[in-house]
Amino acid sequence: MKRSKKERQLLLTEQISDNPFVTDEQLAAEFNVSVQTIRLDRMELAIPELRERIKDVAAKKYDEVKSLPLDEVIGEIIDIELDSRAISIFDVGEEHVFQRNGIARGHHLFAQANSLAVAVIDDELALTVKSNVAFVKPVRAGDRVVTKAIVKGKNPEKNRTFIELTSTVDNEIVFKGEFEMYRTKGEETT
Image 1 (spheres, helix red, strand yellow):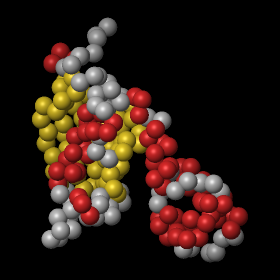
Image 2: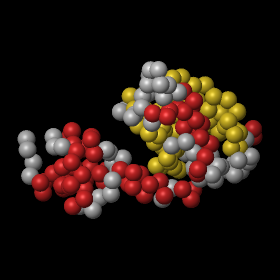
Image 3: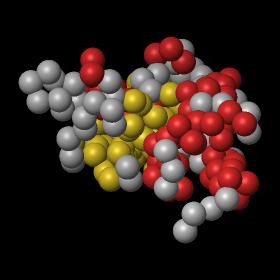
Image 4: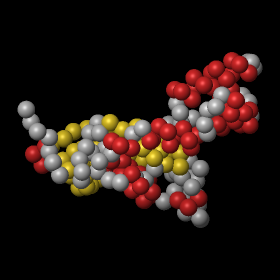
């Protein structure tokens, strides 16, 4: 069913508001129009392109990260609640893949997950004690990796935090891991 321009733009605004990380290509497929039409709609509605939307969302979260400088985070943090959960995105480029087969080098996926595990810790210093990871599916250039970190438990006596991480591409799991993190201070018990 073909929508009117006004109806499409209203739905486009709602969709981007609900998910600021949706791509023009995904929107074009959903509305059954060209990518150029989506870009023109965004321009008319003064909706910035994806990179600007990501930076805007990320800028609102940057002041919360304590455990490492933001330029050391692999990917872009788009949501964070310290000592609870965090999400980052990483766009895989040609420089991140093996030339021979186009598959992303594993250390990039691990680095995204590990830096997010460090960033979610509400402490000045957080270090990885150990990790158990699995590379589930290959990732290729052009893929957008969304990594979610969830704090699963804490051991304040040993200054440890346990984090579960899952990385997806188009909602399919490509990497998962469990990280045990050291932090310089435990939590006070009441």
